[in-house]
Image 1 (tube, rainbow over the protein chains, first blue to last red):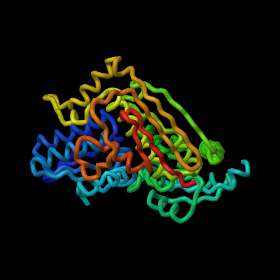
Image 2 (image 1 turned 180 degrees about the horizontal axis):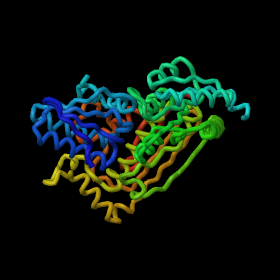
Image 3 (image 1 turned 90 degrees about the vertical axis):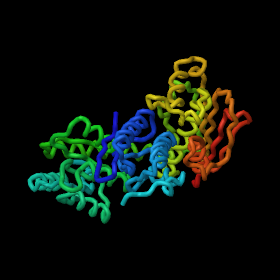
Image 4 (image 1 turned 180 degrees about the vertical axis):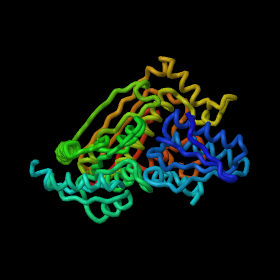
Length: 102
Length: 302
């Protein structure tokens, strides 16, 4: 399983579907991220608008993407967060780490 | 038509004129108070100004479709009953509608009987729910103990039923319910993975040539090994009106030392995020001497 990706200009977009809290969803994120990364995209935007639940496992997968991009002077961004995902990000202060694409 | 139904306020949203006329006829026949709008945005505006017992919406509408309207409405008010009318929904659409909380789904063409019966069903379900919610409000004390295996918990969610009951009884809000469930899941995962399966967090950053991390690989292997997978987890959930106490005990031997510190400044590290979430959500978190038992307490403002 992979999440849909899209390239617009120099940015890659990943539309995460369902909850980000399991090995299956983590693997889907990894594959979608690798697809964009291997195509040379170093600014990648995660759309978590359809995600209702994200736990420490899912956050770990997001941070792995962040670290890989950072190692190559890239940027991981997120679409504006809402609901419980926003709450979880704020609990761990991830909202300070990942810029929001407006 | 019984008197309960005739006092209902129904909001209809559909972009087809003919269907809107059918809704008006149905409502007048049933004796409902009603409003009919032509799109999702108008429905949202109307709900912001007035309360309705039921929202009946078409699935396919321009701009804000029925599914998006359902999500937006339920996000604003989780108790709002929504019936979705669909013409040609695929099975996956139906699953998503139910997942997002549609109270009922009707297929076009609709007539008076199908709409009236659907409203009755939704009303009956809500009465049952209200009755249960009333019972939950009356609860003074509750204690439940579960004995679980790794197989019950590995890569699976074990629910926290008390959180749902407290929410439906009006003891906690939706935000607190979500946070309690998250803290509970994090603690269970820690007990199974770091406790019983003895997986080390640092393994998450050791990636093999296939892109698989050591943590996941060893986890799968140990789930096939009865020496690990046969270990148990005991969960004790105790509630009185002032507090909710959750104790989780595993049979892990823990070759490393578990700390209790809140790692607020180290969010990018591979360890401690789950524990950090637990500390931020619960009012009190303690461990026993060998780290195999965690006690989490949340004070309730009842």
